[in-house]
Length: 68
Figure (cartoon, rainbow, N blue to C red):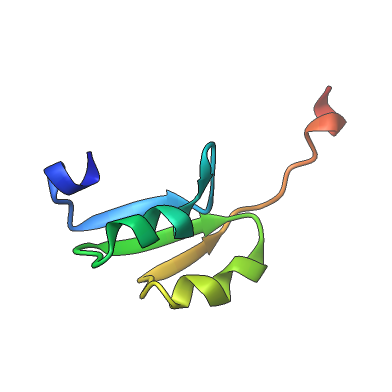
């Protein structure tokens, strides 16, 4: 789907239902678009640089049990 639509920018959460964004991008190399990563975990920021990320957005972590 991504390859067919030829986007200029793709926004990806690092943790995906069937793997992670890094695995997805490995399958799409060479990456013909810019990538902006999002994650609750800052530890992924360094790895996102390897994929020439244009930016990394750290999401806040919400304690869902607090609202249950």
